[in-house]
Length: 104
Image (cartoon, rainbow, N blue to C red):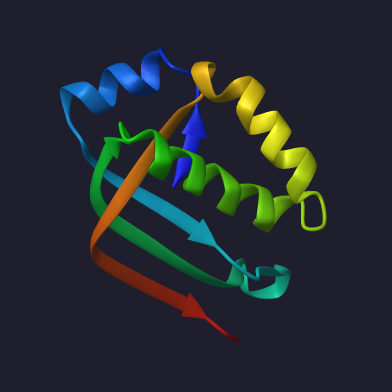
């Protein structure tokens, strides 16, 4: 799940084509003498859609609060209630995952 504004360039693109990729880069370390880096990365490919169901939207926002603000769930619920009408929630359904890395 992702949250964003109700309108904008990202939403326009998703409406036009819901196929997306999402890249995450983990631990990295430069190797100056080799003109390279050690790294780990993963790319997720899938379809993104706007969550329409209000209960699922609230559930997703609560998961984000739990991840990024643990211990502040009550305050998070109050924030969600105030901002729900102006917050878009997107759901990524994963179709394929690819990863690679260089450890040394």
